[in-house]
Length: 338
Image (cartoon, rainbow, N blue to C red; front, side, top):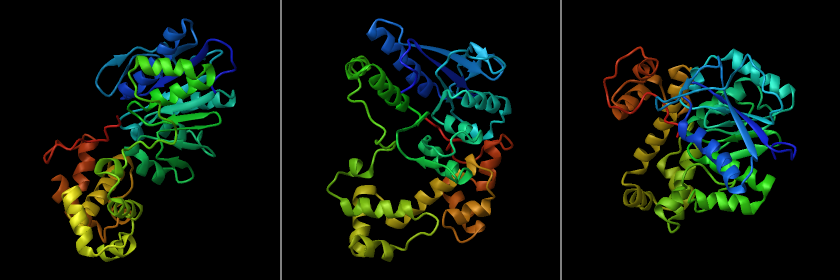
């Protein structure tokens, strides 16, 4: 639980350039609604930027900050980093030092969307279980192998709160409200937001395949799970068939009927999706990305990538860095991050 039962609980939100508006507003609105429904100021918040000036979020709207990192938030119980696009490119030593100061003061630290990246870079998640937006999972695990980064909706590990993007902050802060002020208040907030239920930290970020195709196809779900768990060393179709207890032909029919493609194509697209995340969110050499995603060589990887995305991986990375004007299919230069 954030705070020490004194009211109001004070929370600072550190906004980094291109932060996700939906994730930020999901957090703020949950606290605002808690105050409104309770009829008293249970929570107060302040917005912080590196220099104290406005910060532009990922949709182009600029948000004014109350403080800069050269100032101190007195008597605050928690600081949350609000991340979004291209946070792996952020050079923010001043912000990192500011966060470390609050860690030394034993203030609760947290992150929404990709904000976990900045906490990890500051070495403030070492020894804690954490999460990040699903599009950044692979890159974060590559860059911070010492961390336990889960695919859960949110993680609360002692005095560290981290959650995915989109509406996940609603669920994390609803759980905080429930723990601090009771289930009835959280339920009333949920009703105001027209939320069907408050998800907990055991919920996954992405909709499981079984929910999309129905629970009647466990063999197909098992085959896809095996593919997802074996990206670096892909299994053959015969191996997949053996492990799920089906013939090759039966497995091919399941993929064609429910996923409208053959197993080999589905597997290739999974590996290319992972490769694209690493390409755009890390500085790993292309040959290392190729090997990490199960391709026998960089030229083979480049050909498959170009065939799928209509642009070679090297040019994709240059375009994302603003060094190349886009030809090729408009697939977006960076992860969307909710």
